[in-house]
Length: 258
Image (cartoon, rainbow, N blue to C red; front, side, top):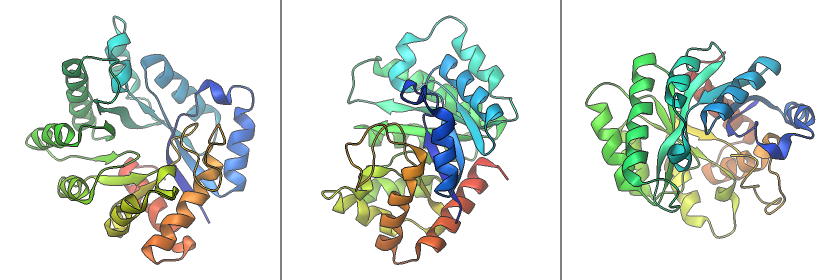
């Protein structure tokens, strides 16, 4: 069985001491493809370096909303340039966040719009971070769709069924991370059960959000994706082999990787 971890912060310092071992354990667990996701310009460049170093690793480049206020002169130009690298499979992580107060909201909106436009210009998928701002996200995505087709994923989805359907209507994919396995996440599992088979993805968001039965054990890592896959396969009434094949095929379709 082969799994695709569609969101891992593989450049995070939590992996500095044993990154090669983390990738090896992922492959041994069947997680043969990993999307290493940048959150700043330097982080994005590190993700590209990891994609060049490790087979099966691809990069996403962007500036996560909580880091937008920290951007230096030329950082956005760096993103637009490195986005052309052949190992870059996606733009992001981008989006909006009303939970933390690290970046003024209008600055977040400006950068989210930039990422969406870059995605459309390059025909590369975008990755959306969303926290406590579902309506804001959907409104900006609907505006972006008026310019052209959207190709993207709602990462680590925690919204309700209504928001999920709104995103599906925009032709987006929906990705679930470890919190869908938590005991109190019954409502989120209900949402995961109704996502069409060809639009669902899985991720670790490592080093965060270790799934049950490893909840609270830090750092999370791509090998632990199998626990989230098993939970969702059960919720959706399919075998884990079938679910693994489907989500991997979905990811390859979205990100355009072999």
